[in-house]
Amino acid sequence: MTEEILDKVFALESVAMFRGISVDDLAAVAAIAHPRTFAAGEVLFREGEHPNAMYVVTGGEVLIEKQ
Image (cartoon, rainbow, N blue to C red; front, side, top):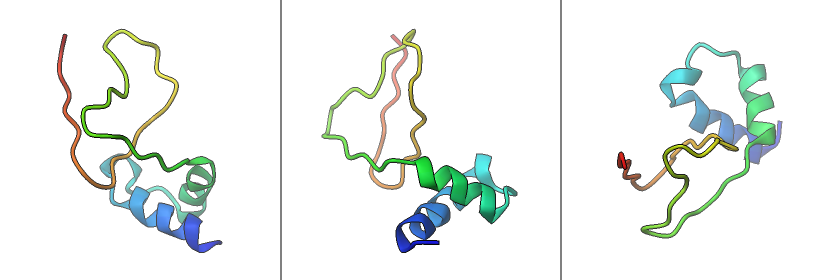
């Protein structure tokens, strides 16, 4: 397992919905995960849009507003 995958596995393990999942399964998720950085105030998605990604926030803050 690469260091990059291992770092992602550790990040995923800290998320409640991933607790209890095997390291192998977390590594499979980590292998297809793509780190992204967003600017302050940038919109990730809007209410009613069909999702095309799942976000795991590993640093900073996210504001969720109902429109």
